[in-house]
Length: 374
Image (cartoon, rainbow, N blue to C red; front, side):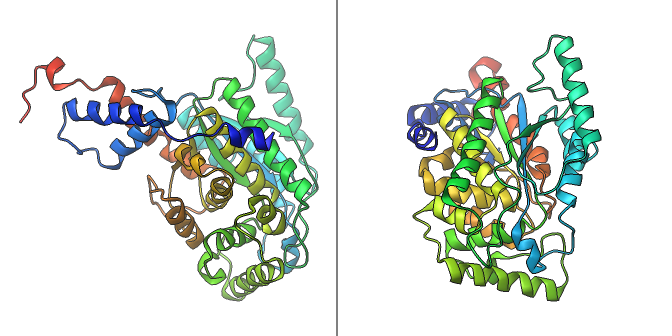
C-alpha cells in the first residue's frame, strides 16, 4: 500500500496554475492584493489540475493518538493515562478541537493507532449510540460533523523508549503509515474535500523534535520546545533525551521509514500516511502544529511532490515547527502562539483556505462587472 500510494503522487499541474494566475489578473481587485492567498489558490488549482479548483469542503479532521515509551525519561509531567482520557473527551465532544470543528462544520475521526491504556468505555458507548442513530436516520456516519467517531487501529500499546532502543520496528512503522493511508482513503471516498491533521499523545513533542532534528540536521536544542510548558530542568532533560536518541540511532533522512521507526511515534507515522494519502488523491491536507509538520517532513522524504498537497495551517509555538516549515518551504496561514495540537490550529485556518479558493469561483472579472481597469 505504501509503495502504491507513493507512486500515485505527482507534481502540480502547471497549465492549471497558469490559468489561475491569469484569472487572478482579471478579477476586480488590484493585482497581488490578496497576498499569500493568491499563491495558495494557484497551488490548489495545480493540485486539482483545474481552474478554479474545487472548494475544499466538506472538511474532515483525523486525530491520531498514541503513547510513548520515552515518557519513562521524565520528559513531561503529565501522566500517560491522559492520552486515553482525552480520547474519551474527544468522543464526548468536550475538547477544544470539538468546539472548533463544530464551528467549522468539520467531521472528527479519532484513530487509536497506539494508545497504551484503555479508552473510557462510557465515551465509546456514546459514540456507538450516535453512530447507530445516524444509520437509523439513513446517514453513513462517516463524515458526520455532529458526532466524532472512533477507529480502532492499534499497532502496539505505545512505542518503546527511543532513548534506549528503536521506538518501533520497521514493520510497526509501516503498519502505522498504512493506517494513515487507509484513513485518508476512507475519508476521501466518503466525500472529504480537505483533510486536517490532528494528534494526541502525552510526550509526543519529544519524538517530534527528534524527527525534525533528523530530517533538518538541526541541533536538538534548536528543535526541542517545552511542549505543554515544562519547567527548566525538565526541558534540559528533554533536550538531552533527543540528543541521546539521535546519537544512538543515527537515523538516515534518506530512509524515512527507518527514521520513523528509530525515533518516531505511532501517531507521527500515521499522520505521515494521511498526508501521503491526501497527496495521492490530489486533495489538500491542512497541517496543524509541530507533530503534523514533523510527519510532513517524513512524507516529503517519501515523496517530494507530496509537499504540493500540504497547507501550513499555523505556526506552532514549538521552535521545531518553524524549522520544519522552513525546510518544507511552507508559509503558515496564521500565527497565534498556539501549542495545543489536536488539530485546533488547522481548524482555525480552514476558513482562510476556503476563502482563497472561493475568490476564484465568485469574484467578478473587470469585464463582467463593467469595472474599468487602470
